Length: 294
Image (tube, rainbow, N blue to C red; front, side, top):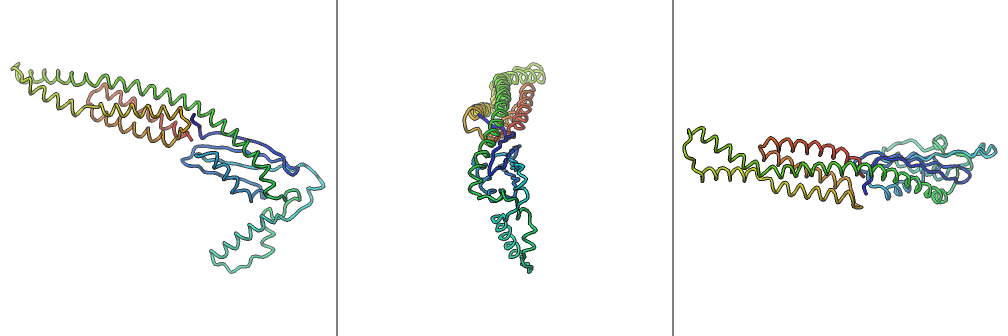
C-alpha cells in the first residue's frame, strides 16, 4: 500500500492538571523535514519528539505543534517557579555563542531573567521524563491519525496511478502491433517509388530487400518495448507491495521516459509518433502524482 505525504493528525492528553493538544500537518517534500513548535516547558523534549516522528515517517515536511491550556485554577495561576532545565540550556547556548564569536560581555543574572519561559507557572515545572511518559502516548495517537489520513490519500493515488499504467500499457501494445506493419509499408512505398523513377524497369529484388532489412534493423524497437513492459510490471509490483517508495517509483518513470524517447526517435511512423506523444503525456501526469508519495 502506498502512502501520501499529505495529511493531518491531532490528539489530546492531560498532564499535571493541564491539557496538552498535539496537532500534526504534513505536505510534500523531497526528504523528511520536521518543524516543531513547543511551549517552553517542553523544550527539553525537542530532540526526543523529532526522533519519535522520524521513526514513523520517511518523507514529507511535518509540522507538529504542542499547545498547553491552563486548567483555570486561580490559586495556582499567580504562582511562578524557576524552569531550571530551560535556564541551563539558555546558559549553555549563550556560553557557546560567546566562545564562537569571541564576545567579551558577561552572562549576567539580568540577562538570564529576561529570557523567555525562565519563570513559568508553578504547575509548568515538571520533570521532563515524567512529561515525556505521558506526552509520548498522545504523540503516537496524533501520528496514528496522521498516518491513517496519509494512507487514505494513498489509496486514491494508487487508483489513479493504476488506471494510468493500464492506459500506457494499452498504448504500448498498439505500438508493438504497429511496428511490423511499418516495415512492410516502407517496402511497398520504396518499391513503388523506384518504379516511378525508373519508368517501370524491373527491380532488383535482392537490393530492395537489403534496403528494407537495413531500415528494419535501424527502426527495431523490440528491446525498448520489452524493457518498458518490465518497468510497468515493476511499477505495478511496487504499488501493491509494502515497499512502495516514492523515490523508486520516480526512478522507474524516468526509465520509462528514456525508453519511449528512444522508440519515438527510431520510428518514423506517424501513427507510432502519436502513440509516443500520448504515453509521454501520461508519464508527465504520473510523475506529478508520484511527487506526493512517501
